Image (cartoon, rainbow, N blue to C red; front, side, top):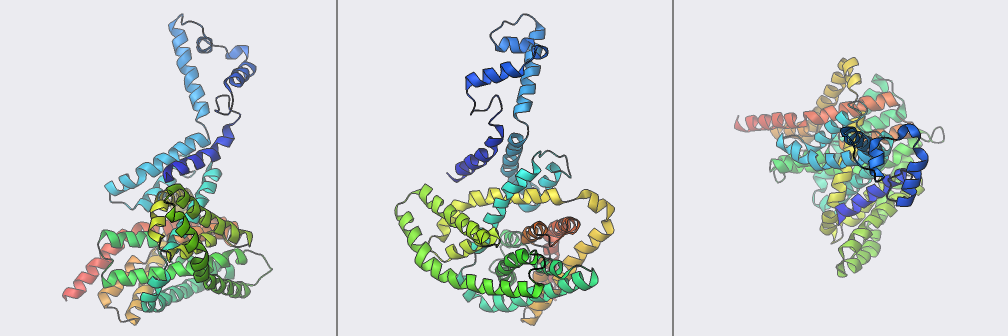
Length: 465
């Protein structure tokens, strides 16, 4: 039912743009004839139209005219959002299987497809703004997925690695990157805070998929990497709160904004356990007992969207609400059922989000500022690898394993795409910096499989020595 609901949702959103088309389902057959009659002049009359009105085929020219007219009608009918919708569904259907065939990450597949189909490629997407607006729901469901993996029980069991190793990696990396952005590159304090916080995060989707594919989740290397990613997921909350405040102009200083964000974050975390226990658990228990799949899915969507709209109404990010909804549901006994129901929706919309991120990869930027792009990509990857490895060594992780953890966490994360685009919308980052960062983060992600292989070889070599 989930894919069907999604299909109806997207189609209903795009259908409104075509209600006045003469062949729209919302226009009766009588009105279609009236529209054709009033919009057709004497010059438009041709054999094909005569045949369509009940005339007879009298010559090969009639057949040719019918084919030409039919082609033009179909092309007109499929223009704009209708063709965009079909292309988006085609992309989501074929991307993952084709990416797996060539041993490419599906995320990179979506980025590459977005680059090819977007305004910097063959410009196959006509309504770029509308597509990006739809992809915003992908961000909402992506943050929900991050939240639902953050159960209090998991955090407590891994508390030393999560809050010790993870905190060290994040704050040390963010401090270094922030100083470089502000003092070295001359960015404003607000922009430096966003750049530092976003670039200090790694790609949970990318790294966890690599760990699962290589059966490394239960190894020391896998557990340390996972612990760092969990802490990074927690850091998403203050970042989501800080960015809108930093874009508030002169009303709040950066220090005030950060302090305000920390207070709001503590308040949000404090209500998670109470809301989950006294509100969501009883509601989901009642719906689950009814054994009605559509109702269960409806309550889940209601929870996600209502939390998103609530935080947005309070002047915060709607993605923060989705993240908190995930955290609320993470400790319920229905967590796995929720994940199962939401996976198709989440997969399609998150894929659509990465597809639109591909629009931002500027090949012209890469060709005209090659040295700057290469330096930025290598600078991010090398610095993050060194600092993450050093953090692991400080927590008594073996040298080879520490280096492998550092290398696999050296890329920019998918949340950086969210943060940079959000910061641009609030005026914290300008368009040029945003495009540069989106392009460079995408390239660091492309390097991840190769860096992971390199890290594995280093770990194996040091263990044998």
